[in-house]
Amino acid sequence: MIPPSSYLINIPLGLPYHKVRITTHLLLNFLLVPNHNTVMATIKVYGSTYSTVAMPVFAALYEKDIELEFVPVDMRAGEHKKEPIISLNPFGQIPAFEDGDLKLFESRAITQYIAHEYFDKGTQLVIRDSKKMAILSVWTEVEGQKFDPAASKLTWELGIKPLLGMPTDSAVVEEYEAKLAAVLDVYEARLAQSKYLGGDSFTLADLHHLPTINYLMGTQSKKLFESRPHVSAWVADITARPAWNKVIAMRS
Image (cartoon, rainbow, N blue to C red; front, side, top):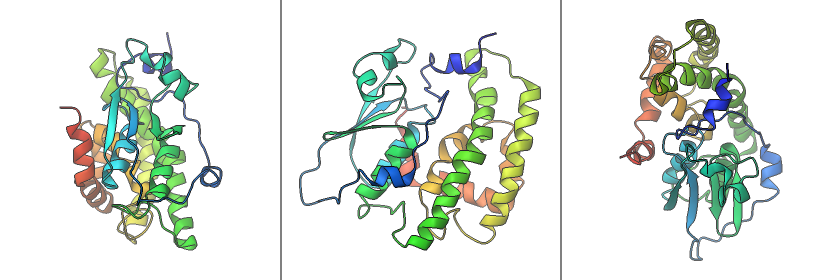
């Protein structure tokens, strides 16, 4: 049996089979103070409109009211292992990102760059107050370390396998629904005290949940969100954002 990760790199949906993390501190060493009086170079995003790792990049740009050039990558044809992708991302994965002479890969690194470089445009996805930013960073880490592993596994089993004509593993679903439920119990307590995970406003801590939530709300796992009133209200709020609706509209 070929492991799921081997399928993921060969389907057009572009779901991640491995995630390389980068710390905010390392990324910020490379950021420059933006000069928005100059003409902005065209931002290019290479990926798929169905990819759970490309969609946050699209969402961040739309939250910032920044135009982008979308370059579709056909992963069934192996385009992610060819130029120009392989020069932009040596791992041969999506998304890949270009802003002028800057080239980035890894979804969370890209959205961090967008949030900081274009801080004064559109929605402020990060916070300049150091203490508030520290809290936001905690919940950004929770998303990546606690929520995403369970949510991505369920997305594969319930959202992607059926599209590929593959049987869903009910034992895996049961295991990971229990793991996601434990995370959402923590979210329910947090969201009883705060409108959003990172504080009083929508930030990157919320944004990166959108792709997997979008898939899971069309599956049996939606009950995990709907059964928790504060989580349910939060999901309704973030999925109704105009920027996210623009991401979904990219598929048509």
